[in-house]
Image 1: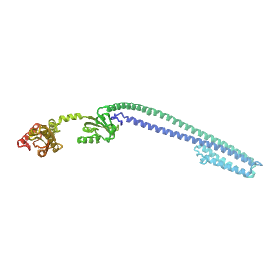
Image 2 (image 1 turned 120 degrees about the horizontal axis):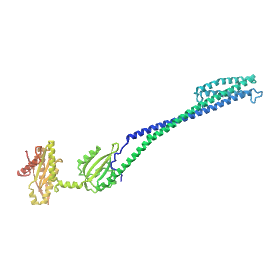
Image 3 (image 1 turned 90 degrees about the vertical axis):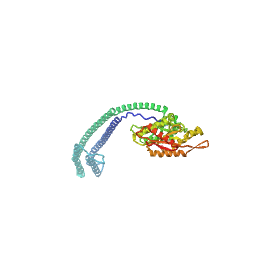
Image 4 (image 1 turned 180 degrees about the horizontal axis):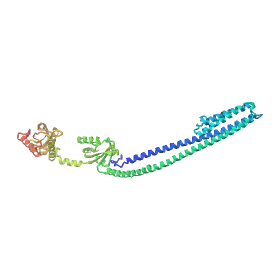
Length: 517
């Protein structure tokens, strides 16, 4: 069996707190994302600075080695018997000098080849620029070494050693200055990292106080509300399942989604036989079309209604149901379906039918007829509209009973009732007043139209034959007709119609007499 519950209770929807918490959560996420991005930037920057400093220190050491090698090579040229030929030594000097110059330019302006960024500190730029003179002097010494008479010049060697010492000292100063600058940058980056770490902790603390704590409270309240609603819904579901009335829940397209045990008891249909079907499958052909039209109109507008309809059980037996149908909505107010409480009123309608209906003819009895006459008279008086009342009587009906028996008389009365039903209009109201006397209420009808209808009814009865025991009986009727109006009460209208009936009988029967008063 498909499970469902009666209409959900309208719970407390904490819309505004949820929005505030969502906004706070998004803000916290943005802050944390910014802090993470800042931390990543600081780390990348620190790594880049460390890598650059490492390259600079390595190159500075290389420059020192080159300067020392240049001096050593120059000294070797001054030997009487050098280990390498003089041209080879001069080529080595020029190669080391070119490498020294490239590295020097790279340290000043930056070099993609060497992986060096441009120098941005003014002090270090000035220190590197001051080495240009040393580079030029060393290049001049190497040019002098190209002359044979300079090879034994001890002054040249002393100058070369002095330049090398001066260069190494200056390179050491540059390395120390660069290291100090690098350390200063690292300290700054550490401070930034500490600030980011502190901000992250503060953000997490704020998130815990402003988001997580309220969220936990709201979640606790929501959980409590849901538990309360669940208990309430369970109680309602238990009532819906066990109530003696039928409970039917449909979706917004009126397709059955759930039925209770009372539905099965009243209709004979099991849940699996009706789930997914329309409730129209239970309507009997004799169901009042006006009630069905009203119900469909209200439901199509998403509104509720209450109607009494003639329905049909699974075994084919017809039953009367009182339908109380109400719409179901979700928390956003959107229509989600309908719930119908159906009561079996067959017994009440049967009692009501017998209380208001003539058993023999099936027409409304005298009491019901006069109730309707009173209501119609009030409506006519209120709307200042026309109306008429006709009273008819079977001519010589006593002779039919005396000659053919009461069974034949009952059959004549039943036949007359059928003729009246098919002759009058749907808006007219017939009734048996007693014995062989009948009445018909004609709303919204003036005397002329009422007279034509009465004459047609008289003709239909005269042409009708009733077969009893192989014999065909022919009867006629006399009709008296009176108009309803605001100046006449019910008793007067009935008295005038009754007088007209007696005039018709006195004038020879089988005719219509209209009172003009």
